[in-house]
Length: 241
Image (spheres, one colour):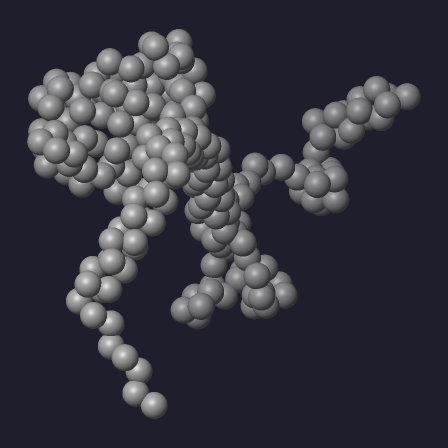
C-alpha cells in the first residue's frame, strides 16, 4: 500500500510547528549562562584555594602578584592584602631587579629548588615550577611550589652523618686476620715478607701510639740489684702500708 506523500504546504506547516515548540522551550529555560558563570567562578576559586601546593599568579609585564591561594598565604605567613599587588621577588625566589631567572635570564623553572621569604625574614626551601600562559594580549606566570624544608633538613643530616662516618673510617684502621709474629723477638712479618718491630708495625697500620714504661717483672730483672732501685722499692712498700 503506497503512503501518500505530504504536500509542500503540509511540510511548511510542520516546520512552523517545530520552530514554535523550540521557541517555547527556550523561553521556559532560565538564564543558565550567568548562573553557570557564577557557579564556574565559585568552583574555580574553591579548587584554587583547596590545592595543597602554593600557587601564585604573576603578571609577566610588571612582575606583580595578581592572585595567590590559601596554601601559599599560609606558607608566607601573610594576608592576601599584603601580597596582592606586590612584586613577586619580594616573596618568592628573591632576585635583584633585572636578574629574574625566568623573565630576564630566560631560565626554565621546573621542579627547581628555590627559597620562599616568609614573615620576620624567615626562609623556606621550596620545590618550584613556573608555567607561562597567555590570556588575550597579556602573559602570566603560574608559579606553584611545595615546602621541602623537612626533606632538606633530613638530607643535610644524612650528609653530615656520612661525612662523620667517612672521617671516622679514614682515621680508624683495623688490624685483622692472622699476623706472623716471631716467638722470640716478637717482630711481625708484613705482606712483603719484611720483619718489623711490633711497635712500629702497629703504629703504621693503626691509629695507636705507644708510651714506654717497665712492668714490675722487667724492672726487677733489669734493676733488682741496684741500690737506688732497692731503696725505691722499700719506699713504695712503706707508702702502701
